[in-house]
Image (cartoon, rainbow, N blue to C red):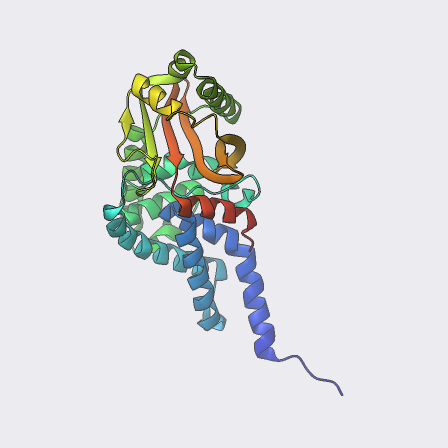
Length: 301
């Protein structure tokens, strides 16, 4: 006997094929808007569910429909996340992702996924952030962004321009990947050997250290400011570096260091640097964010 393929099954297979092809971009949009890989994954999963339930025969552009749905959901999540983060203990940092084994996330405009920029993006409102991400990271046209955000083209141009100005005021010139890696390795080497003078020489006078632990013991609950204080803090409590096994990883397109203790990863360190030196140290202690970083190595469409 010969059985014809079920049209509904074929249609769903085609829908899945389209979604899988676009999934890296959808995750990239959600992640940049939210600064959280876990929340971005939830958004992408919800988009898939909605895509299955949609009358796809009426969708002119699947890519446009999926990007629109992703962006709007991410904005909604960002609005509620802002309220939740008000109760966060200590500084909040974006969830890092391992782009060494998952390069697709940073494939377009890789600088738009660096932790330092994501941290600055958090200072923008969710809609302003989404407009900037769509324009600067994914090169969407203003009419496309206007359709996604349900705003006029004129308004979108103003929003993106305002976001650019805000970020320009906040951001510093950055170093290339080679220099960034050199600074990370020099910093870890000086800290492990107790060379405070070398540590201070790597830092800018206004350097800041941010520790994201949400109450985890050992993480500073306030930003630490100034070259000397940051250098002393980086030395850690007695035994911090002696008992640590630092291993180089790639986080958000840049060299970072994952600290291991007794074989288990406990702390991720990354930096932001300008030609003048390291101006921001970002320590991720939060076990949930460490787990998400490790999970990102196995994320697949």
